Image (cartoon, one colour):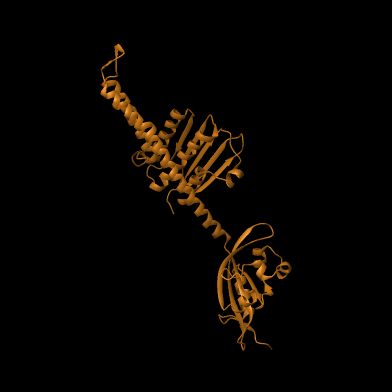
Length: 349
């Protein structure tokens, strides 16, 4: 009887392959020249090929067999595969791009010096690669958003606050004096200019509040949300009905800030994009989580199109909720408004 092939771990291949198959990994045994000997069902599922179709495809055609030596001969590569591991991608027949991590190890007969076959283990790492790509894209979006916010603040400071202060300085120099071309009138006096100072201070306060809500630490989430909705209604002329029920007074800061920023971003989106005439914000406390529901009666949008090209607002909201271990859901249809539902756990994990 011929000697059984043994892996570098010392386990016979007829025992090793079934053991690896139980782990949900793609497993195959190849000849040193790259032709197939056997494979398991998991490898067929990963590649999207039946066993017959897989065996009819060359190893070098399916996988990029050497990422560093693209001119290498696959037979030489496999024959010399004492232990190799690398990551690569391929496109399945259904068009899906699949990332895999491939580990290759030579199998030897007990009395042989040359490898009799090659053991290949294939792990589907598409989810991890997609997550890495999403994190990279999100980082880029966040950098763009930070720069856009800095530009907006700079414009607001220059075009509004600075110009208002410049006008005020001229008014102060002429306060109470007679207007040269109209002797019957005087420039605004100190009392009138005081109102201008108060208006400028109010605009600075609102700008500061949007950047950092100190009220959240002192009056709590419920009062902060109620105040924000009231101010939004007054400024944007879009009525926002705010309902809070059993919202805990004491909350972990990350949880409270997440709820505040999500609602702030959502109602800002309503003002920018929805053309809504009315909106609702509902906060409901529970034993383990706070439920947030934001509804508007605006024009709505195609959620599938938005999923493929999400704006920074939607990305920011969903990422904030995800970072505290919560769930973010959005539903909308053209002409039927938009509903956002978030579940934010009371303790971050």
